[in-house]
Image (tube, rainbow, N blue to C red; front, side):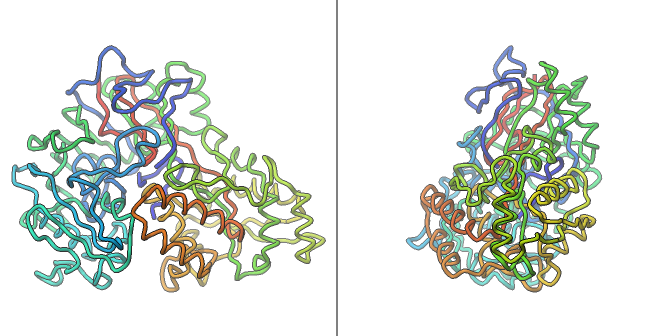
Length: 573
């Protein structure tokens, strides 16, 4: 699962709605414009859009990208079987057809999924896109030298667990993928997966013509199936220039608007520089956006005080939760009353302030993000109010055998501008002190922090954690963290509470069989509430993304899937 930071992150998967600071209204593709952007005409084709990002767009190979729906920049070049609906708000959290005619036709038990490609699909060189190209693309994504993509295909496809791709085993493909004709592709799964249409948005489903595959060098010039093609890729993704793919047809693509003639992606920039350039909007920067750089608290305060700048701030939410995690194998966290006491003692107001304030973080009492697509079901099993309930916490500590309080160690990352930062750890420390809990802080450098909390042999008893969704559903949120069968002993383990509850595992299996995604969402929400009763985590907050865009940018769309401005919809003045 992609776990991006608040300030700098690569886009994975999404969330609540688009609002513009200072009261500017949300708008989708049909609205054609947003208050604060140029409003003298409807979006028109032409011009150059510049993207200013912190993170280099490296590994520009569909096999290696870890982004639902192809992210932002990749989705301009790589089309997939399905994609996200390019609308603002909740409508943007829906999966829709892309290269395929529909979102997939499942067998009765959702173990076989069949797709038919649209007619007239072509690559940038004018050759036809076929089902064999998608089969080959999926197969090459298993090659060790092209690692980095989402892991689901290895787990879901029959016989894929030990497959090493077509390079090592010349001519050997996956029997689990059939292509009975040039427009039909069939996937055979080893278990029911009602959310396969979501998985089919991943870039591993981008067609790759075998004759044009150059292995690890393919990222230098991938063959486009989208509205734009790569004309240059410098510095391993630090600068990518895209121009129109003349063989792309809007008649086969209802999602991408492709207004600009050219897109110039400049990455590896300092976040403060990005925000300064967007704020000034001089020259080419007036037609610029960012998809990965948030406004910080000080920057936001300055922007909010300027009416013109405030009208150029897009607000989005990503399916993401920051929380406290417990290892119940380590005392005193093996005692549920201790975990409950900490849940009551937490002061979410101080935590939110440490995360940048209410404009950049929303207090959370549920593990699932507060969005319909995830199945959000409100609950607060250990009501602490806005500032904590130390009296209730002390009561529970006494019942747990700690009438005089206790001392514990909280592990966190030393990285600044991070969800597990020292500031947030200190806010937790201060709140728990009121309940008689002395918290010693253990700060680790980011790599050590990640390695420690995901190692079953090193995992501390009490630490800050976070999780982001690969697509807007409860499945990729709850299963990796709470499915006992996903506890990993010899690799990166995310089931930090070591929960292996047969009833939870069974419900996960039952929900996975559902192809009615609305019905599945309701059950994910109910399961979240059930798991929450065990106090294996303390949800703290969901991040909010505030991002500037240039004064000549039109047609602002921020969906509940990505939480950031969708550059496939943007037009420039």
